[in-house]
Every structure is written in structure tokens, then in C-alpha cells.
Amino acid sequence: MYPFKLLMYINRYIRLLFFAAIFSGTSTGSIAGELVAADTTSPNNWSIGASQSFGSFIANQPKSEYIRDSYTTLTEVFIEKKTNGEADWHTSHNYPSIGIALLAGNSGSKQYVGNLYALYPYIKFPLLNKHRYEASIKTGGGVAVVGRPYDVYSNPKNTLIGTRFNVFLSFALQNEIKLSDRLNLAASIGIMHVSNGSTKLPNLGLNIPNLSAGIRYALGKPVQYPRVVKDTSSKKIDMAAYTSISVKQYPWVGGSYYLINAAQLEASKRTGRNSSIGIGTLLLYNRTMRRYIMEDRPENPTYQKFQAGLYFSYEHFLGRLSIPVNIGGYIYNGSGSGIFQQYGIRFRATDHISTQMLLKSHSGQADFIHVGLGYNF
Image (cartoon, rainbow, N blue to C red; front, side):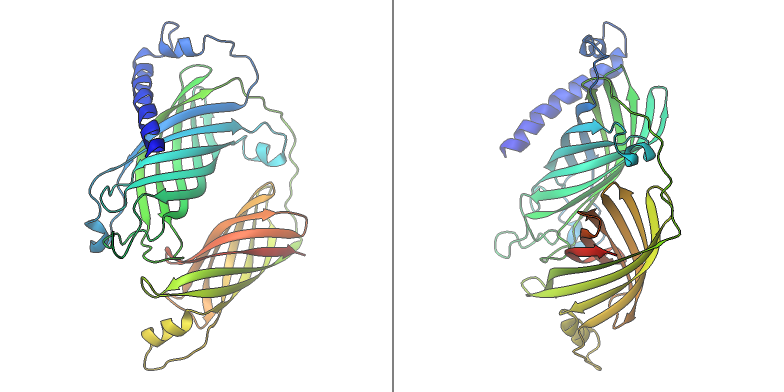
């Protein structure tokens, strides 16, 4: 509770400062003017700030609707750094900002889910920068903690979250107005997601559309080094193979845990400085399939645990880090709708070795999270 109380105190101060800055504008006698009275020319790419978010999680099933007893209110404090152009991807993405944020507040279900806390790194991509206005996309992911996860004895009505520690994802369109050389007002619209990827049931998850407002204070004038970025598009076909594992609870709360093995083979072509497209095949040894098929098709049961699918791939590169997105369908022993998606992160540790963590889903519903290694030929 102590981190939550501390953030609530910070939030009260932020709101007072936020509204004072709105009414005072950028005059020299204003609060904003006082904040930037110091030397504004000193080079520094770091910023600090805070925001307040308001929203309500989506309850698309009756068993989750009665759990919602209030609006979601979350306070966030952050520190971020404007990239300076030392790497090619800084310039090709128009000098994005990288930061880390701590978030805490009411999940929207005080009685059953409790408070929500999250710690996550993020990246902010500029879309438009004109005079004192900047529009950007802010996206990130990290770890979320819920105060009251499902418990068969003490909290059986929480059908949304079955684990205390979960995956946290955030996506927002942010608008920022510069009041002075250092003080900025921000407002955004976005969505947050909290779940454990079906590692443990229940796992309906929290999907929270939200609006937020806040301030950002620059510690100095950002340094940016202009550079000529080489065109990395190529006719060469890049080949990569991945192997990964997952653990999934199935088919009900309190059910057994099953190990899932996955293998992928991808062929892709670099289409520009930051992206590639390609095709791939997904092979699964899915130990939950025996239970699934016996329940879904009892007239024709099978014990086949092998699955195979083909997919189209898109990958966006941020230096050694990349964000892959796969959309495909099963060609053997499919499950669900027959269509699957995968998205997550990859990190190129060396020229040939990479790691990955991907969430596999069916029509937006989480299937499992798998983690593994890859080899780039």
C-alpha cells in the first residue's frame, strides 16, 4: 500500500500544477516561467514527468461485468530520454524517446481485483512536430501486479486475473504542447492490457481504454546528431529458425499444466530501413490437444498432439531489438477458429543468435506465451 499512497500524494501535487500551468500560460511570471528560470541551453536529453489516467475496463461477458464496481484511475510517474542519433535507428525513426514508467491505482474493481501496479519500459515515436505541438505513439510492455488475484477460497468471483504477477501492455496516441523550453503539457488516448497469457486460469484479462493528462519536465535541451542513414533494403532472402517452449493450464481453473514445444522456420526480405516481410511455418507439439479434441469432437476423438500452420510475417527493427507480428492459419490439426496470431519481441544477441518471447492467440484471445532461441543463417 505504501507505493500506492506515495503516488496518490504525487498525483495531488501534479493536478494542482497542471491546472495552474494551464491558466498561467507561458508568461514570465507564471509557474511555467519559474520552472524554466534556470539555464535552458544546457544539453540534456533526459525528462521526468507524471500523468493521471481515467478509464473503465471492457466487460464483454456477464461474469466479468459484475466485477466492475468503479472507474479505473491510475497515476504514472516516468523518466525518459530523447535519443540523440548515435544509432541509425534513432534517425530513421525521427529521434524517438525511450523511458521507464511506474503506474499504480484502482483497477476498476476495488472489491475483486484490487489495486493495479505496473513497471514497464516504453518507446515514444514522433508522428508530427510543428511549432509547440508534437503528436506521437507511445507503446511499451512490462510487469503488472494485481492486489487481489483469483483464489478459490478467499476471492472466487475474480474471473479476470488468476495470478498476482502478469504481463502489462500499453499503447497510446499522445499529444503534447510545449509551454516553455522545459515544461510540456500532455494528453493521450490509449488502451492497457493485463493478463498472464493463459499460463494460469482464470485469464479473461483486463483491457482498459483510457484518457490521460499530465506534464513532462525536460532537464535540458536535447542533443541530436544528424546522420545519413543507409538504405538497408535488400533482394537477399534471410532465413531464421526458432525453438521455444510454453507452459499452459488447461482446460479449467485448477486443471493440469501442460508443456508445449514450438518450432518456427521463417524466410524474410528486408523492405526498408526498419522493416521486413516474409512467410513462415509454425510447428507445435501441443499436449493440450488431446483434452481439447476429446471435448470438442467426442464422436471422433484423436490423441494427435502435433499441429502445423503457415503464416505471413512483418518485423519492425529498433537496432538489435525487433517487434515481430505473425498472422496465419493451420494446415494440420487446427484448433479454435483455424486462424492464429503471434506478436512479441526479439533481441539479436549476436549476428546469428537471437532470443524471442511471443504471445500466440486465436482471434485476439490468448492461447499461450512461448519463450525461446533462434538462429539466423
